Structure formats: C-alpha cells, structure tokens
Amino acid sequence: MCRQILGGCFRFESTSAVLLDLVEAAYAGLPSHHLPMAAPEFRIELRLLPRQVSPNPAEPPMVRVQSGAGLLCGVMDASNYVVLAPEQRRGLVVASEDMLGHPYHLRYELIEFAVFTLATRGLGLVPLHGACVGAQGRGILLLGASGSGKSTLALHSLLQGLDFLAEDAVFVQPESMLATGVANYLHVQADALRFISDEATRRWINQAPVIRRRSGVEKFEADLRQGHGRLAAVPLELVGVVFVCDQPADDPDVLLSVIPQHEIADGLRADQAYASGQPGWHRFEQQMMQLGAHQLRRGHHPRDAATALSRLLG
Image (cartoon, rainbow, N blue to C red; front, side, top):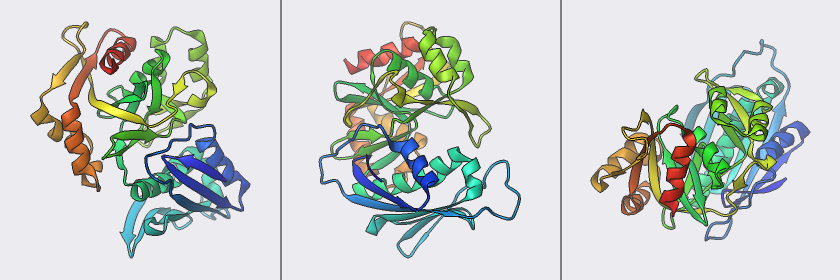
C-alpha cells in the first residue's frame, strides 16, 4: 500500500490485512501534500504476532523510547514495538493480536509514531504539538496547553470555511515555513457540542467513536474526510503563530493581543519542549519571530475566536 503523507511517499507492507486496514483508516482520502523537494520513499513493514498468553490489560503500556546504533525504538512490551532506521528510511511495526482491541493506541502510538518520526527525520521537518488552519495557501499555527481549546477552535474554523490542515500535530519545513499535517480525525469532548447549532454537524460528531486518552479524557474521534469542511489541499505557508489561552478576554470584542517580538522565542520553547531540541528548530524560531505572534483569549462563543483568526489571515 502506497500513500503520500507529509510530503513523503510511504510504502506499507504486511501479510496482515487487518493491519493494512488500520493504515487505510488513518491515511486514505487525504490530500497529497508535496514539499519543494523530491519526495523521498519510506518503507514500513507491519507484522502481526499471535495473542499474548497474559491477560489483556484495560490500557496498553505506555511507549518507552530507546535509541542507539542508528536505530530508534518505541517499545510498549515484548510483542508491541516499533524499530526505525531513519537513515535507511525504513521501519518495522510489530503488534500482537491483543492490540487489535486497542485500535486507537495501535494507530497513534505505533503506526503514527513510525510515520511521523521517519517523515520528520527524512524531510527535515520540525514536529510541533499544535493545530493549523488557513485560507488561500496561508496558515496560522495554533499552540497552547492541552485543554486550552485548540481542537474546538480548529472545529469552528473549519465550520466557518477555513482550510483545515491539522488538529494535533503540525510539521514545518523551517526554510520555507510550509506546514503540513494529517487531517484525518478531529478529537473533541462532548462539552463542545453545546456550541454547535447545525444539526448535521452535531450528528456527525455524535455518531463518531469515542476514544480515551491516556490522561483519562474521553473525546469523540470525528472523521474529517466525511465532507463537513475543507481540508487544506496543499501545505500552508505560515504567516504567524497564535497561542490559545483558556482565560476569558477582558473585552469580548478584542480577543487577540500582540505578543512582543522579544517574548516569542521564550513562548515557543516553553510550549514546545520536545520540538525545541530538534534539528531545524533555531531556523524555525528565527522565522517565526519575524512573522509575529498573538495570544488568543476566549470570547462568548468559539466562533468568535474563529472569526478573529479569519481576520488575522486577511
């Protein structure tokens, strides 16, 4: 199975139809993003092992990352792990039949771990925990702590006609400041439904499966490919960053405030502890300081924040 993901060509190989079905569920029907470079080819083998003898836990063990000898490994246990050789652009994902009962963890913590890591290393991308929306090829990076409202803001931006690039993970080429991502699912809590008046949208989210994050938070996992908005057809050129804050605005008519340029670098590093240690971060930071940053506080309704983003995009 071959898929164009994050600007790279990924070939998935397996004798297990069910593992390839999980790949299809994650990456089929997405826009084929291309970056200004020749698209390298990555190969990932997926291997299914027999069910373990030990009882199946309610939640799989957390992934532990190890590296050495040119390899990078993410290990849950002896039967569920990822081995990556970034220089060779190859990876092996091993999962037991037990993990088929945890498709969310299998998809995100093993398969996606392999895809995102190989793309980051092979394409020289800066990996960010955040969201991104845009219009006419221009994008705004949305950062902020978990629970600050990035996913709800991304949803209402989508409903207001902005292009949806990514909700949880954004990858930026630091020289061009082009951002790409995987716009397959949107994760929102049930509380977000009270702000949605459109019945078709409420039904779309309500009928979605519910996943449980490791933090214990439960969210709907709504498939963005079902036609409830526009997915970004191409990578978006970033024009700025917005730090999403869960505090209400002093003036509900003024949600955005400019962050002084000398504070941007510290804000980026504080928000992106992992990314700030990756290759390309310094150039990304320099570019973002030139583009500028804003803080976004909450208004009366999430659509007010989405409207503010639309104005910022021009």
